[in-house]
Length: 375
Ligand SMILES: *Cc1c(COP(=O)(O)O)cnc(C)c1O
Image 1 (cartoon, helix red, strand yellow):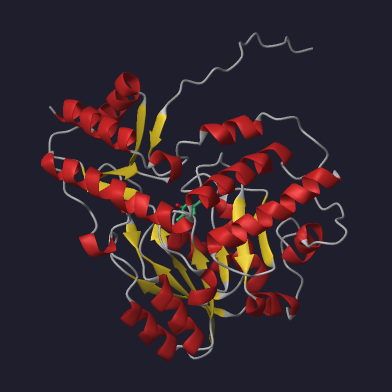
Image 2 (image 1 turned 90 degrees about the horizontal axis):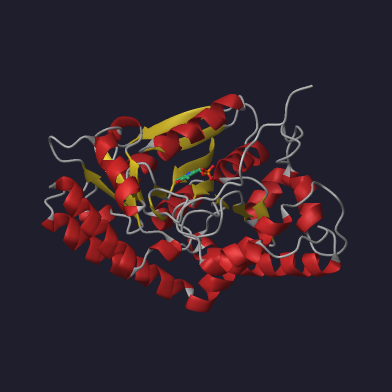
């Protein structure tokens, strides 16, 4: 028999999370998560799930009945869009301007579908002209997939224009809104987004582990017209729909009950503030942070026109040790910022201003801490 390990309870410090996610969680959300667990088919819980759905429809600005939160992180939301909608042999135009566009490509390849890449340099938004050329050159393409807010670089792409292009060429759009939802303008119905997914731990300031997802009626039609079954059992939305879809709920999997309390509360906070007010707050905090960072001599990776307010990528100055500097921020200030990913590893820092984290005191702390570390 193995001896029982002697460990103490884990008591995490209270960090200030200003990286690429998870972000600072609303205190009300942490409190909500600690409430008593009820059964996931309890009528009161089912009623709360209905509220989560209408709150998600508000956050996405959609009337799509197929709007749910997957019991898994944002990466599962990405995979759910591809496994449900894309069938073997189908062509998908994939825009790649950072880490997450490349992951979309990998999803397409694993399904035996055919990716057509539209590459943009890291730090730049997706180029609508290049997308239009690809759509014209590939009239048999069925989908256009892109990342709205590229968290690896801090670039914001023009989702409205890209979705309109997809529609005018008979393609369904698949949009990664993991970092955009709640942080910048996103209007799913008005812009004609067909499949969109997000994550709980970025601008929603909820705990990690859930992925909001919404399919337009056209995406649901595509799903229902599939020739082959969805190759993933867990992510098959034809099964999940029965669980979320009003009327009588039946067992699909055990919902992460307390995590859904947390999402309910974070979406309630967002609705209380108002979506447009939240977008404006992210912009306002970004501008204060930007002025301070520029005073410290730091240069942004992304041009002002395509900068995400919620993800500020700046080049690390010459002579500063990336790991040592971030370690000092963590040890001396309890402050987490993100390092660079992929092409930007070791070259840039990513400073998040997401959700509840987009506050004046966080901006002030970050600037003060960076000033001392850069000296
Ligand atoms: C964080 C992120 C993901 C992945 O979400 P996880 O919750 O980490 O699985 C996908 N896309 C973008 C743009 C992200 O920022």
